[in-house]
Image (cartoon, rainbow, N blue to C red; front, side):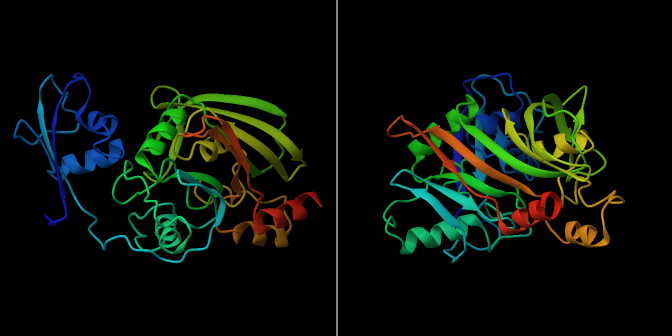
Length: 323
């Protein structure tokens, strides 16, 4: 075990939950999946014993969690290109470019928004303000995420107090988010709401699917802004924040996001010209953009709102398919 690993001793006060879920909701782990990994690797002891993730915690169970340090290298500042839409002593609002991961993880430990934030705070005017650590040592400041291929607005917390406040706003659905997406084909209904269950695919663990019997509830509102036989430009609001939610729901409607290789957005292109096919297949990312973000500022308590324009690839696609 690395000498920088952190040992947490915790007495269970709210019994009845699975061990992995309890660790996540108690903020000991940043997610249930991370907790399950720690449990499997033997970093979690219950009353001195190793238990499974399915173990149901009991009142006064004694937990000892050895939080593993990053197995790669320590986080370090690195110059990364992204737009800072807003910044004060409590938070930043970032317009994340497509292709940039939010925090280090498997397959990418050196180039992330977190690395860029550390660089900015090191050399910028607000360098005296640290990032929140509530999300975990490898995710400083990160309150919520966008997929690597998704561009647009994300809020970052500088203090633990701000992080906690924003997290509660997300949980209470006080944060307003609107995305725009370009999807394949013509959506017949101009407005619709999807309320389904979403779970990880058993066939492909990198994908999520709509399931009628089990999963987490996902609510998505879709409004068509422009459409023709080849494509539909849509605005999307989500009430829940499930992994890949928008991508899964649009694929469920048989209108995957253009360029989304995982969910079918580069296939079934018979009605497109050869140039259009090449353009779609070379996008390298789903044309999904977080364009609007609104929340109550944790310090002033006033609602603040931000807008980010779409990127060049998205703009080019709109010109190709709508003139």
